Length: 158
Image 1 (cartoon, one colour):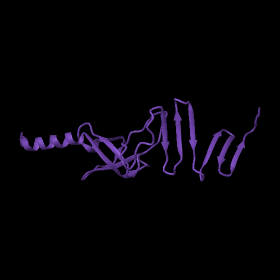
Image 2 (cartoon, rainbow, N blue to C red):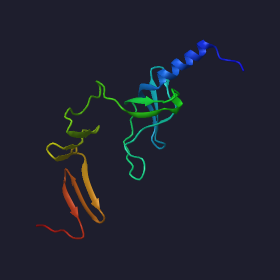
Image 3 (spheres, rainbow, N blue to C red):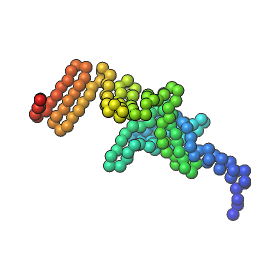
Image 4 (cartoon, helix red, strand yellow):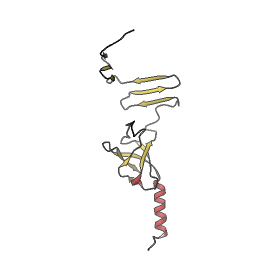
């Protein structure tokens, strides 16, 4: 059996170690397949899965977007087997909050959802062009800039 040259073995090992954890930017997305491609320097990965908060009976959807900085983990150093594990704040896109008691999401249009466990306050702030809709079976509540509409088989006011 022919053995690889020691330098080639060392080069392959160095490449694999360098690829175990990579910072990169999402360069393409296939949301129908829940896969993205990541560019890290001169390397662009194949289509990789990305981590979500839940993926069983309770499923969440908050995919990374093109241009977002992420971390790729490839346990064997083979980027073809990598997984995008999360986004990373950067100067162009800093953290939207600095208090540890506040869970806050800021959307591209300026709408926000926040819960402050210190003050026990939940805040939903939607831009003027938007709407809030709550639906339970045949009952619904819609709030937008034009007003509030409430529909239900029965309405009790106390």
